[in-house]
Length: 220
Image 1 (cartoon, rainbow, N blue to C red):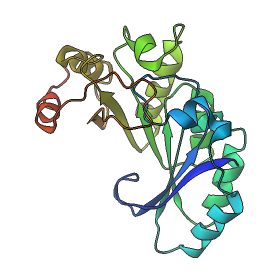
Image 2 (cartoon, helix red, strand yellow; image 1 turned 120 degrees about the vertical axis):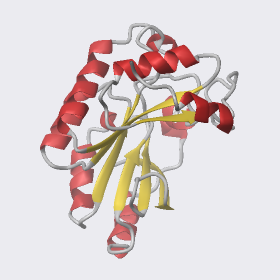
Image 3 (cartoon, rainbow, N blue to C red; image 1 turned 90 degrees about the vertical axis):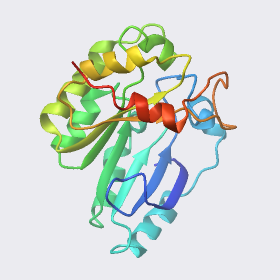
Image 4 (cartoon, rainbow, N blue to C red; image 1 turned 180 degrees about the vertical axis):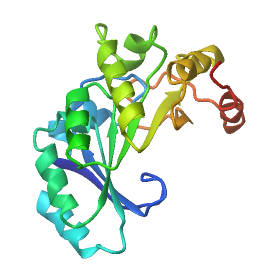
């Protein structure tokens, strides 16, 4: 497995657990507000952390770290993902997968094989604005819908999350997204934050107070 980042300890990436986070490269989206530009656009230019080094650390931390979050880029693009998860799973860790949901076949396969415990799927925007938000013109929304349906009907622990910026997401959009996800266990909102790694740094985030108000919006 080609690993481009490794956060050895996190209290936020795996809800309820002490976690570690592994970053993989490559993505099938080009979200302009993405803050992992290097992993998405030029993963081959990013530093590589040896798989053996990561596995050795996780083996050593059994009983201290509880869960491992695998993110990207888009982790489901990695052909070695299943084998890599099995190696981590052998240590007894719970696995959280972050995904944009555009490869529902991989998501279903991993979950049905009992290899992931928690799924966090990004919902980029309303259906109408998805192409603009994910940076590809001919986005196949049926793949997004397939992942949403599978997660809501089969996965025990999951969340949907939307990164909001003022140029792409209005309060009405939040309403529409929540109607789309009506009945889901958790839809989490987070505000865009500009960093050096943003693909196209032209966006504006919501303040904490504004985000709190947006989070009060409920589905019909």
